[in-house]
Image 1: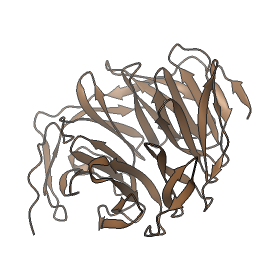
Image 2: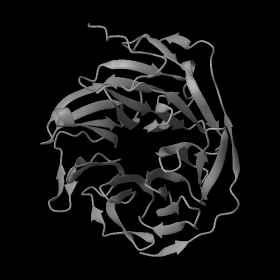
Image 3: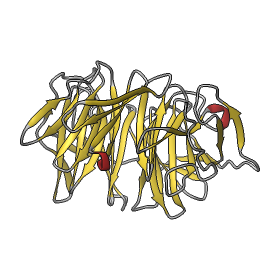
Image 4: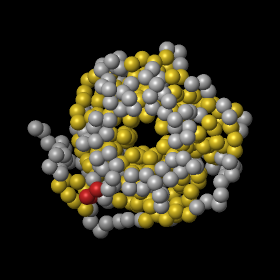
Length: 343
């Protein structure tokens, strides 16, 4: 696996627009159980010239980072300034952080690796047909590629190196890569969904539909996986792969999921983000473009505990990222959830 270093040009400055409302905006939604939508934005990060595909909170620097179709990974300061950290000729589809390190996966199949100390970043050829999934577990990194392979990474001396490739049975684009204990949940854009472990290989969920599986969270108290699918559904599976719940959650593919406290958030091509109560997946909150959300597809969704409390960052095809405050339970800080209406 070839590794090379790359010196970046002087960081580009990116404008951030801070937004606040004197009163929460409201709107009605006839097809949503909690029909009153309210949200107050903390900030809108504006400066990318391409769609925002992924985001992360870099705890080592205390700043949010975004990865976009313009081939830029940007870092956003609390004082309203954005800086381009990484540049690539291809779009960035994935980004994650691990301690002092930042990893960004490109459409060309390279992963760029950056240390917070400003040393020249590494460019590592990792996958064919793009890098769409990056996840940290234990002391290492895993990546998922467009040609249907996943790879473990290890740190050797002063650089990160990808290990041997494990091929997903259907050979299609890996979009879901979620660790849990000694195994991973793996989902592809062509419909393969199941678990993987280095010792036992891949095991398919037989009840999984032939639709893209883009993201997931682990409901450990229920010993279940909750999966976001390309047909707009959320589906819950037991550990043995049997389907226990499925329902239409969005009017388009569901691209991202994240869990905070008692709440699961989802992001969709239908321009909305929604919140669901973890224990039963009852709907409790929603942000649409009418209430301070995105005007196009929402591709990125990440939550983190920051010095200012829990926050939720979204990113979309409108080339912007939006920052919301959350309560410890995971709901919007300005919008405590109403109890779901019982039919």
